[in-house]
Image (cartoon, rainbow, N blue to C red):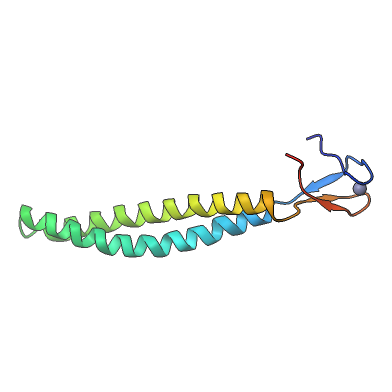
Length: 109
Ligand SMILES: [Zn+2]
């Protein structure tokens, strides 16, 4: 960590990653919602596949299809949200704060 304030050149600089956390949270919620609809679709597909295996295959197929669909949707949504939050963090919000003069700025990277 060799951050420096562009105004007073102090090295006492704090970093925030609020946008990334918010983005990940939003993405997780969105992903979970998408996961639910994916789970419903997966459950239907699983049930149809399970029906081929006989009466016991229907609930088994529905369950495994729903679990797989939900997991895939949730994980995908979270990754997407974190990515979105990170780019917001990097390009839009000032996430560095100088503890000496109070100046807010972004990393020059
Ligand atoms: Zn400063």
